[in-house]
Image (cartoon, rainbow, N blue to C red; front, side, top):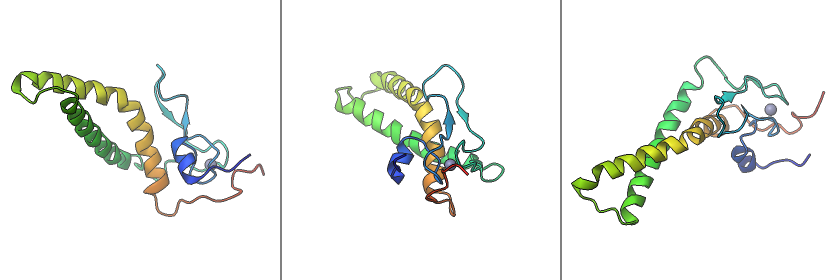
Length: 132
Ligand SMILES: [Zn+2]
């Protein structure tokens, strides 16, 4: 199996230690609820490092939401929606719709950012994904 780079493992939501196991079960856009695996299916790393670990992902998700809201608002303006009071509910509607569409991505990547970039002491260990 070819080794993934850190960025490839990040994009594909793979385990930060072995870069082979999936962090999530199922796809991002399905009608079933999102589910984070408790353990890496390949190297058996426990993804929730300590009790309440994924609460920190909420702050990451908040930052992602703010970035999306600003992007959608500016994009609406650039694409021709005048910045007048009568258009207020168009802005609100576009922003809420965009945030709703991005919510599965926010759920996943806030946790992946937390695991890959914001957790001290959690690094790639070459060979940790090989069968013992
Ligand atoms: Zn793993």
